[in-house]
Amino acid sequence: MLALRLALGTHPLVLLRRLLVTAASAGVGFLLLCALGYAVGHPGEAPAALRRLLWCLLPLAATAHLAVAVARTDSALRPRTGLSAVGLGPAQLAVLAATSTAVSCTLGSAVALLVFLHLRGDLTGLPFDGAASELLAAGRPLPLAGAVTLLAVVPLVASLAAAVALRPRRKPLPDEGAAARAERREPRRPSAAPTAPAGLPWGVALIAVGLAVETYAARGASGGVAALPLPGGLGAGPSGVLAGWVLAAVGLALAGPGVTHLCGRVLQALRPGATRLLAGRALMEEARRIGRPLGVACAVASATITATTLYGDGGARPFGPLTGLGAGLVMACTTATLLTAALESRQTRFDTKDALLRLGASRALLRMAVALRALTLLVVFAPLTWAVAALAALPLAAR
Image (cartoon, rainbow, N blue to C red; front, top):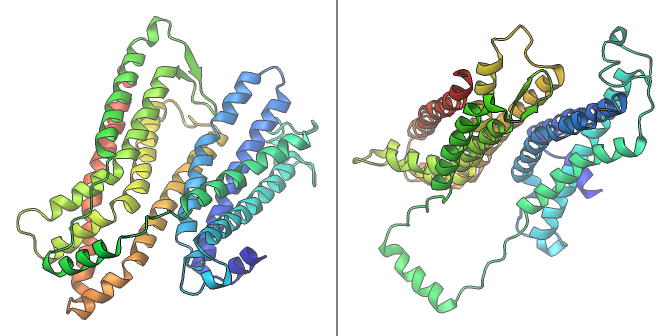
């Protein structure tokens, strides 16, 4: 009940973000129900139905990522002074965030069920002259237990992800003497630079391994390597190529925070002015918060460019409708997650901005620093995304 009251009494922008989670959940629920409908309509093609179900994991992961980002930026669920006195400590707020996420996703699953039943003709007859009857197994009984189980997947996964991401971290109690000595030393030295994320070397290694695996699999595809059929009109491809794509995409996502931190260091090199100093330090401090969703967005963009390059020239409609829906969900969720992370970064820097304004910094200087940060990330990540996509498509395009 408290989660519902908070959902109804929050800012309209917060409600809009929760509606995005609801819409994404509805899309994933519809894809899961379509996979169930395919299994019902084609009982002798269990492997194909299982592949359709497994390909729903990508939109599901993107939706859970968006739900976590929205839960992080929810101002009503942040720890504040006095909440612990009424029984709303960090652990209780994490549970409340998971409950709010579950409510939003459950609403989306209900919408997906209504749309699915309407397109099957179970509510008011077949719409669109029965165009989707074969795809959704219209006229055949739908197993209720299977539909309910699949629809419960999205709320369960998203709420668990939000609870784990927002769980309170235990910190060791500080030694009073050591804290006093550190406080006395603090005015004598400048604050230390933020530590670099540890994922850059691993991300580069995964990208290299993924491209190598893909190249090897593409060269051996003509020698009898087993092909993995893809749903939605993508044909079939060697399983090693898909494994290489996945490794390269994971490496790009893992390297995002490290690349962002490196961009901040480069901006502050060679006697920087105030604008470069502010922009670079902000990138270093926000490397993990901004770098992770930025790396994921670049991985999705790289995979999209690769797929479009390989399959976009074969005809007017190279992708099936459900494949297009899944790809659209992944791209929309990653973009919304990136924008939500940028908003969270802006909210966390309010105190720093006010302090700089009190010290005499102009608003124009702060706006220039923000623009420089965005331009730097665009200049670095756009060529990196294109390069990974081109290298991933090169072995298959040369076949």
